[in-house]
Amino acid sequence: MSNEKQVDSGRRGLLVATGAAGGVVGLATAGALVSTFQPSERAKAAGAPVEVDISTLNAGEMKTVEWRGKPVWIIKRTPEMIASLKKTDGKVADADSKRNPDEFTPEYARNEWRSRKPELMVAVGICTHLGCSPSSKFTPGPQPSLPDDWEGGFLCPCHGSTFDMAGRVFKNKPAPDNLQVPRYMFLSDTKLVIGKDEKGEA
Image (cartoon, rainbow, N blue to C red; front, side):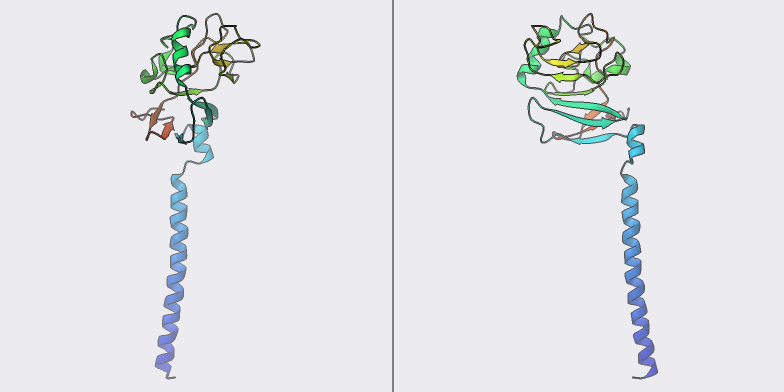
């Protein structure tokens, strides 16, 4: 083999090796860039919006996700749960969500359901009294620590505050306000974003 052919062969090998290394670096860089677009745990704790898939949520079920270090409940209400709200209208302390609305209830949730859609409830699962997390008590009827005419809702085990299936606090209970409804919006029928709405407000 001539010296000229040996040089050409060496150059080709060098070019192939350089190109392959560049491709690996390029892929690594692209991977790093993609990862920077995903919210970090610190960003989530600071309040970054959270995207939730609700495609597997069945009627009567509740899904809990974390937003700003707090549990957020997503409940697919049954027709019976929705109907129970008319029965609790006169028993709750703030049926129209007029108390501290800017803090606890976005304008699109200032209705009987306290939600964008009657069947879907989204609320922060923290009692407005001292910050305990209420337990779900969806089954109607008499049961411990609940009235005999219980229609379903939530019971805070700390001091006995009760909330209906819209997160509205019952009268004469320690909790001063309804459960907070975070700002949220639907991306589709099966996906929603918690912590952000069309106005971009958290």
